[in-house]
Amino acid sequence: MPSSPELPPSTPLPLASPTKSPRVARLRPVIAIDGPAGAGKSTLAAHLARRFGFLNLETGAMYRALALKAIESDLDFDEEAPLLALTHQTTIALEPHRDGNRVLLDKVDVSRRIREPDVTAAASRISIHSHLRAWMVAQQRALGQAGGVVMEGRDIGTEVFPDAEVKIFLDAAPEVRGSRRFQQNSIVPITTAPPDAQTEAAILRDLQERDARDRNRADSPLRPAPDANIIDSTSLTLEQVLARSEEIVRTHLPL
Ligand code: DC
Image 1 (cartoon, helix red, strand yellow):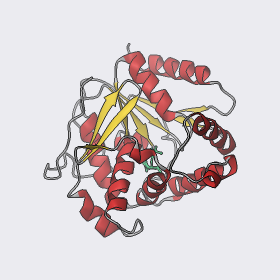
Image 2 (cartoon, rainbow, N blue to C red):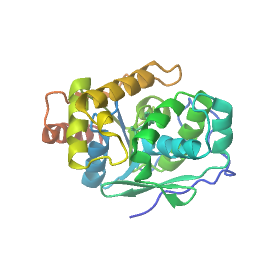
Image 3 (cartoon, helix red, strand yellow):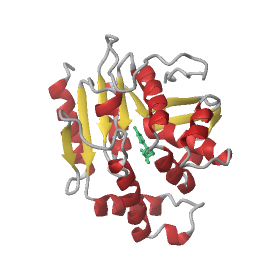
């Protein structure tokens, strides 16, 4: 499986403006998948990538990787300037694989570590900072500029690729997302989280806190792009979500 190009910190960022879409003609389309935490975006993105032969890029993993470095550097997540300085000494690479991304932070595989609760909380907090987001957006545009990618996150259809050929916004009621996360965690327990942080109520509380940060931040708040196809999976099975999404992709792309 091809790996995505790694961008060293000295590489000039390909686009000056984080709010404009790149004007480079793409060889292949971009499928943008956005939505709140726990909606099932990663499962959907991995499925569509396999189905249509695209690369799957999880942008949340990039925020998580930088958050991990901020933890290791003992930085304050609310202070943007030191976090931004950190980006200049950081390389993050995503290697798309069949079931998800291998994530390299400064060439070290952190794929598992970034899923732990301290990193999840830190990623949510650092992602409100505008300049830091601009750095992420520029890297994500560079990764997806040739197209042929399913890119998943919160702002792909609105900011990273507002000209994406296909946009899906996957949503579900918070209680349903919390309950699904709880089921997942009971199959693969998070050993580093204390038991009282793993109850269904605690998971729902945590999810709603991150939702509020995603939806209310000043820069690129989580919202569907005007031309996004919205799927509310509250009362849908996984199979129904996948079938509906495939149908949307086929409608928009000459596959
Ligand atoms: O999708 P995720 O849970 O792995 O994302 C981790 C955090 O990164 C999440 O709290 C919101 C943030 N994020 C973002 O702000 N924009 C993106 N495109 C992807 C993730």
